Length: 280
Image 1 (tube, one colour):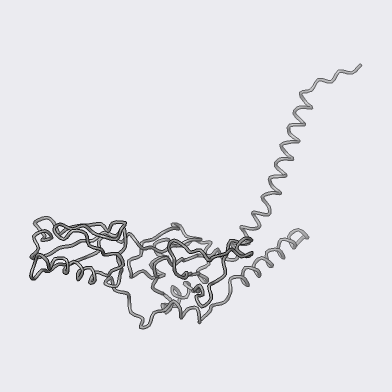
Image 2: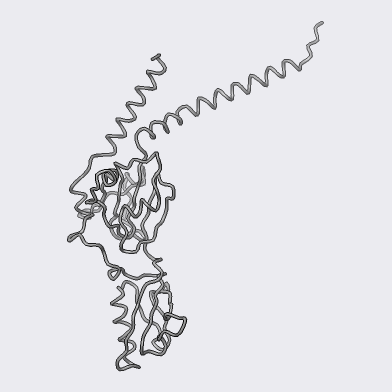
């Protein structure tokens, strides 16, 4: 191994060490914040409706909502103001409610016109709530949350790349409010320099590292957590891919400089060959 190769070898070793130390170890205490007790799948009944979800409402004895041949019922979107507009019943506020709570709200409104109204509500458009997958995956971005989404569901939909680090999948669950943000009252020097705010006292941000490779290899699904709205799944680049990336970044300026020098020399040589020298 020559001197140049030794230099790049030790640079690679230092980069790997830095990456390994910065990624951190598994934190059992952080895992507890994500696991649900008792560990039972979240039923769709617990899904809370928000704009712009779409509902399917039907009834056996309410003429306005009674299913007809070729039609299951009435499809209604939840408006930006959180209400649905139904025939006869008018506008009914449903945002933040479960299916059962919406049914009870609609039955209260129908009580003015029917003595024994019955109806059923279903969700056919899960549009309002989502979670996010970023990093070393084929299809990063926003995914719709249905209330039954697990970490493996998310990764199977987005498919992590060969450059991913499945032993160190990061999941972040932010403090509320998660939509719209909040103004802390003043900006600190840390925020001015880094764009990061301090955690609020008594309300720490939740972050866990999961070994998805262990799930696949060993069948250990204990950490196949149920995702919640606005959760962020970040698939890190593995240390070797990271070293290769930074080495390519370090080599790029050198290669560009060499290319520029070569081009300059070619131009000089061409101009020299094309020049006509006249001596006295």
